[in-house]
Image (cartoon, rainbow, N blue to C red; front, side):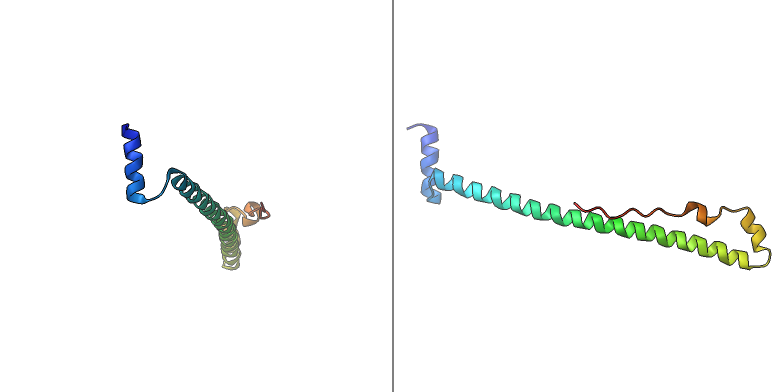
Length: 102
C-alpha cells in the first residue's frame, strides 16, 4: 500500500466521506462562493452609482453656493465693482450627466 493510498484511507476513516463526496462538496462550496461574489458585485455596483449621484449633487450645491455668494456680494455697496474682478459663476456651471444604467 502506497503513501497516497494510506492517506486516502485515513481521510475516509476520519471524515467518513469518499473522494467523490468530497469533490461534490467542494463543487457546491465553489458554486456558493460564486453566487455570493455575484451578489456582492451587484451591491457594489449599486453603491458606486449612488456615490456618483451624491458627488453630482454635491457639485450642484457647490455651484449654487458660489452663485449665491456672487449675487449677495453684488447687492452690497460697491459689490458690483468687486464682482468685476471675479469670475462669473455662470461661466463655470456644472454639466449634469444622465445616470448610466447597465
